[in-house]
Image (cartoon, rainbow over all chains, first blue to last red; front, side):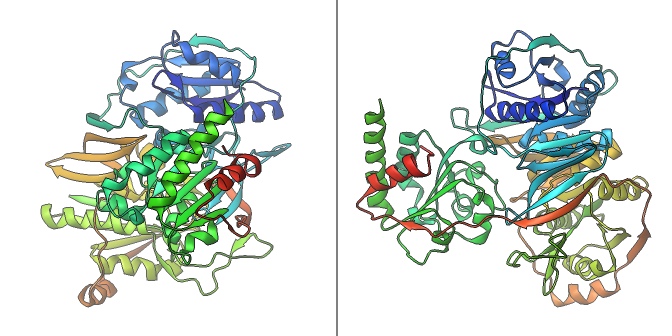
Length: 326
Length: 246
C-alpha cells in the first residue's frame, strides 16, 4: 500500500512541481511507514527518471501507451486507476496543475476517494484521522479538510515547499495498462504554446506588470528585469484583456493563481481580484507611482515612483549583484 | 440542443471573510450571495448564446438548501429556461457531483457546463467528477466554444498556452474567462424568472468523503517597507539577506 505520486515530464525533465509532490508524498509515506511509487506517462528509458528516486520515490511505474498522448482525462483516469490498484495505494498525490485539474477529481470520483485540491500543508495523520489544509475564499482563508474515506487524493499547490533531492534511487519499471475498447472522443487540433518560457505556476520568481506600463511596446524593461533574475513574466487582467500580453500570463482570480517566492508587481494597482491570485507569494514587491495604490497594503516592500526609471535601475543593480556573487 | 449548467452560490467578491462557532463555520451575517461568477459569466452566458443561435433549452442545476432559490432566480433572470435544485447540503465535492450526476443521467443533455471553480472553495472539482460519474469526456478551462452539428470546437488553457480540441456531444466542460461577456438581467428577465419552473428534487443517496474541521484567516502581511526609488541596492539587499528569496 505505497503512496502514489503522479509525475509529469516537461521538455525531457521531471517537472519541478512533480519533484515537489514526490517530496511531499515521501513525507506522507514515512508517516504511514510505507514507500512512494511515482507514476509517469513516459518510456522507461527516459534519462531524467532517476530524479524521482532522488526526490524520494522507491519505484517508478512508466506508462507508455499511444492512447494517452492527448492526455484525455477519461483515458488517463482509467490508466491511473490500474496503477493505484496494482500498488494497492490508499493515498495518491498530484501536483495541482493543469493536468491534475482534469484528472485528479475524475480519479477521486472513480475510486470514491476523498479529494483535497490545492493543498498547502502536510497532512495531519493520527491513527485513522487524516486531515489536510487547503486555501479557500480565493486565498483569504485556509480550511482544514478531514478525509473520511480510506482512499485519499491530494493535489499539492505548486511552490508550497522547496524541492530537496537526496541520494535515493528508484527501481524503474514498465507498467502496461489495458485501455482496449476505449477510444478518446477528444481530438487535439492545435497546440499554441510558448516553448521557451518558464512555466508560470512553477516559477519561484515572477515579474509582473500592468496598465502602468502604458503599452505593449514598453514591456522590454519588464522582460529585462525578469531575465536578470531568471524570473517568469506575468501580467494583470486588463493587460491581457486588451491584448498587450498573452492570456496565459494573466494572474489573478480569473487567470491563474501562483505562489512564487518573489512576486514583483510593476504598475499594477492591486485590485482584490488580482491579489486573490498572488497573495500566497512569499515576498511581494510593489513598484507604483501612486502611493495610494492598494497593492502597497499587501506588499512586503514598496517603491513609489516612475517604473520607467526604477525598473532599468533595478535591473542594472541585479546584474551587478549577480556578477558579485560569482 | 439541451444544455445543463451547474451553478453554485458564492459570497459577493467584496465580502469580508469571517468565521464563527470556534472557526468551524463561515459567518454568513450580512453576506450578499451571488451566482458564482465563473458559472454565470462564462458557463451560463455561453450556454444562452448557443441556445439563441442554435435553439434548444438551458437548464440550471444547483445543490443546496431553500435559501439558494434567490440565487437560482437570478440565474433564471439572465435567461435560462428552467431550474432544478437538489435539496442537499453541498459540503463535499464528490457528494455534490453524485447529486448532479444522478439527475443528469436521465436528462439526455448534449452538454453539461460548470465554471472553472467557485470563488469560495476553489475546488475546481465538480466538472471532472461529473464527467467520470457519467463516463463522459471532460474539457477543462475552456475559453472558446463553438458548435457545428454535434461537434464542438473548444479552445482551452493548458500549461503555458492553449490547445484547440474537437469533441462530439455529449460531454462536460468547465468554463474559464473568455467564453462570454457578463450579462446584466433586464426587468423583463427578472419578471419572467419569477414564474419559470424551479423543480425541487429530493437528496440522492451518496457518500460524504470530506468535511471541513475548521477555518483560519490567511496570515496578513506586516506593514510594507518602503525603499527609496534611488536605492535599488537596498531592495536587493533585503531580498537577499532578509527575505532570502534571491
